[in-house]
Length: 65
Image 1 (cartoon, rainbow, N blue to C red):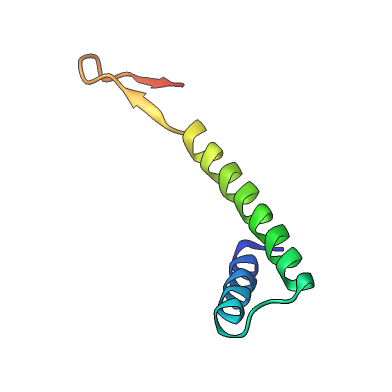
Image 2: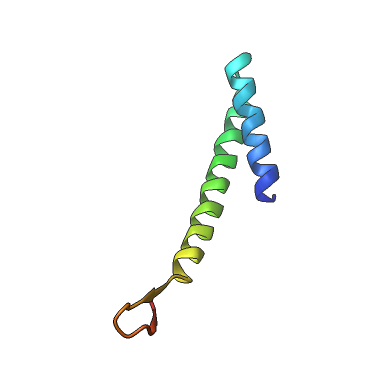
């Protein structure tokens, strides 16, 4: 499931929970979707961190960490 659909479904379940509540099946689905979201988020964040380059202002050479 792509991130937009995942977020959309999580938000849909959240709105339903606030208005009428969720049944056991929907609660389980929400938990699974939240875990998927966090795994995707952490993976994307990790990839972003790995592409950061540090630059030393004194010698202006890029250092990749």
